[in-house]
Image 1 (cartoon, helix red, strand yellow):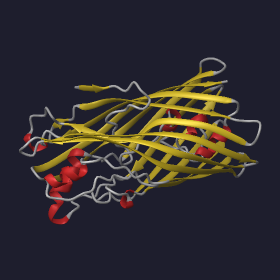
Image 2 (image 1 turned 135 degrees about the vertical axis):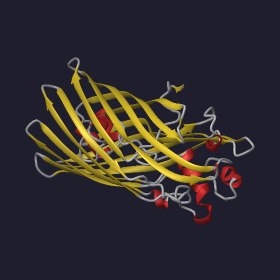
Image 3 (image 1 turned 90 degrees about the vertical axis):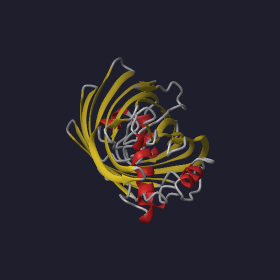
Length: 376
């Protein structure tokens, strides 16, 4: 078993897919509530989901979290060795003497990968893949009465590495790139109990030189090296009743029009999230559910479908669909609080035929997130 440990906030390795290759949420509270966050403020952590909602911060707030990600990918009865990961996140936000609010987020947002180098199963081609996306999001928000709007330019870092052995060992090295994008969000308090929100994140084009083009040529195909993180748009609502908050989000992830993904046969993905939180005396408890059908099109590519099945289901098995979540948190001191969440990604099994024969991939996940938040 290989352990891949992240120490730097900008150094995550082999993150794993949940909604396509995106995590369902980026903070302990969001992940406890099924990944919601478009209409529910999580303070400084709203820089990750809806920048308008940092307008709920009073004073200054900093949050530091770590996610232990334990995916279980079993292909043709062989378990991927890339099965432990640590994913960091940091968020800061503050109010001002005016109606403006300021924030900063740093977080691992997307990725996936497998390691079958030592499987001993020739049908798995000694395949190894490693893909990671990290984001930095400086944020500004403005609030007037019951309406708020927020904006975050996105600085994105990506890294991609592929290796496999289809008869002759192939290693296409590691390629890195930076990209720029933006996120905008709005929120409105309809009544004292009802909040609604919406957000849009632009696509961000990335180029991983001599990786996808070289890999595709080995299988008789011709791809460019562009791999565009897709645009996302979403809407949400939350309702407070007594000590309870009920929140629901909908997101559409535009894989079907993103460079690279569309060539692999990925389609747009509808993401549904719902969460319920109970909070009293500075302590909260939450549960949630997140569902999104896998964006991979089974047997895509006509006469070349075995090649696409191999690339999609062996190297990048973004097959998770259902997530069940739970969490809790409490104040430790007047200014310091601790939050925790657990996510179980239910096993999803898919059978296809690849270039070296049948591929049966079973994918499940377990995730634990811990976070400390300090207000000052």
